[in-house]
Length: 279
Image (cartoon, rainbow, N blue to C red):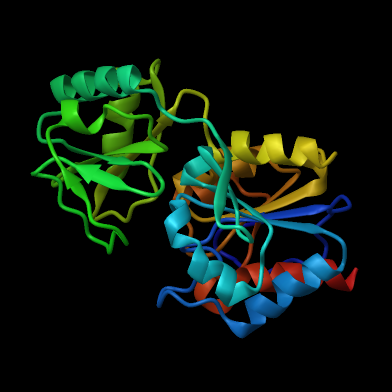
């Protein structure tokens, strides 16, 4: 479908769907931070139909309580770009693929040498630490530990973050992959004005976390429909049997998707789910 026409097509050919995987911010969640009643009803109807619903997000687990409350969904979520599996009912991490301290130290050293002006932070899932020069632009939801990079990488972590005040996130990502792509997985979900890089253990993506969970449920990629909007969703969209980008998605995501629905503010996920449920 043309990226210039985000309307949902009537003739989209889809395999039987057993699992729905959706990103949150910018995809399911509206720009004002809310989840609409229409989206909530569509998600609940999808679960009631016997299909699994999985939130697959860059968010840490500590930010998931409000989403579970807003949607009524109490199943499993894939958090921190695939690094953590989180039970929304018990509010406990039930699995993960963390970054080890030695790798984080090597990544930081290589990036700092290749890209002057970076400041680092570490997301542990239930805690957060950052260098003195790191400026976060959102509520962390927890009191942060402040220290130099060698101090904040002493424990295993869900992901590292690197912020640059001048580089576009696409340029920052390209430079980081060139400098240290053999050590870790790099992505971003940032706006053009926010040079923020997200770093996970090598091979860990939203796709890897979702594929592992789907495999345990006996569900193959051809039975999965996935929704996203940013480069950190690309691996998941490429893995899923049917991929859907919202109209407000990053150009690379729109180009990669099988289908483009309407925007997150127009309930693009719900539009597709309602069509799925009507089949």
